[in-house]
Image (cartoon, rainbow, N blue to C red):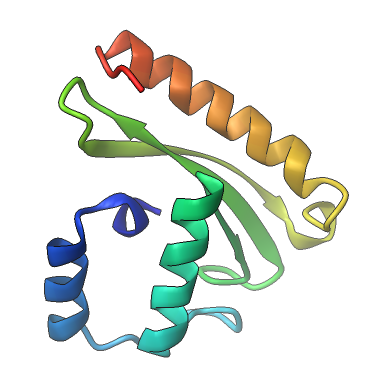
Length: 111
């Protein structure tokens, strides 16, 4: 999640230096797919992952920004994959983004 909200040059540097390897059955190991996932996260304001770190789990995460507008952390809602189907995604996403926005605001971040 943090990667998605870093500046483009930091993402490019990371992608040049990393070897993506499988951790679980949903781990993104293709750099083009990772870039697509980053673009989706930026458009949506949150990330969603299915079986990326642990099989049969999902998580929705939103970024927390400091007073400079820099991403410094994230907050996520995680659980079993069956609970993260299309009808629940917007509910969980809103809860994660609302919590992240409140924390960011308390840290001095102004949208």
